[in-house]
Length: 96
Image 1 (cartoon, rainbow, N blue to C red):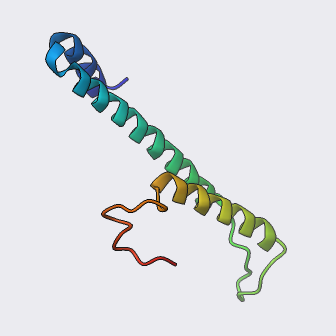
Image 2 (image 1 turned 180 degrees about the vertical axis):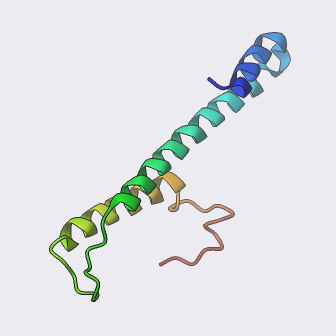
């Protein structure tokens, strides 16, 4: 646990009136960190996925594998980002 989380955790016992708010903040931070880690894993998969074209732009035999990995990664990222939900970011972004 990082120093910030430790400080919040110790503040819960020190401030009984704000304990519930601090617990909610800790939970949200933990969830955001899990989401960050999951998105980082998706970016790693995408960055390590070899493009399925040769230097002339012709598809190689790896195209089906690339397509599957790419689509899976993009769908996972969309779920993590909550793109099916309306937010201040997705509301203004054109749907494709």
